Length: 224
Image (cartoon, rainbow, N blue to C red; front, side, top):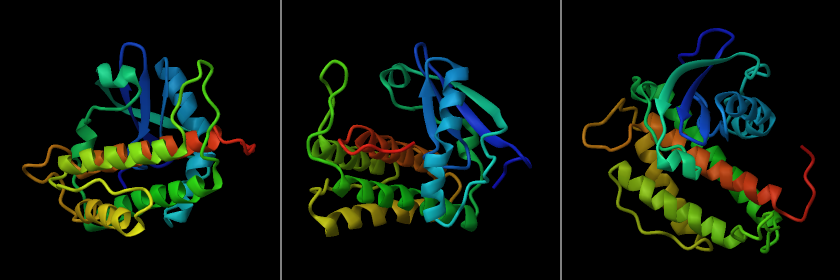
């Protein structure tokens, strides 16, 4: 890890109507807001929730990691940012990746998948709709996550077939293929559209964003 002592390095992706704040060394700890300040506040608020995931990966986040959020880079956003997804590779994503870094990235991404696998069976198929009656139901969200991962895998040089949510073996094979690249310890492999650090950040964010959406839109009350 490259973080200064006592600080959590953050990248801000700044769009026109939305800003994403992402913790550089913690794939999946990424939240959005209408302004930089709102995005950083949302990131800090999400720490307890993310700590559960990181603990499961055996890479616990410091308890006071949100006390000092150090913005180390701002990247211009795009229509993707304003639509609701982080979509820009930052300079810090090209940092060298040691073997230990690569294993850690893989561990954290794998933990986000385990979080999703734990949350989905506990949720009802029909989720609460948004204020305008929108939002996918549970299975549709899982299918969307799997479809996105097949697209993300192409950025890592992989050609994968989208598995059905119920095909446990196929889902596991898809994930292992992605983890194989993330754990390869190559800093910035030539020919890949996404460096492994960014790929881990994007994949983990997408999984957790939808896992937490399922929790939040379930009929079961969740204490936050």
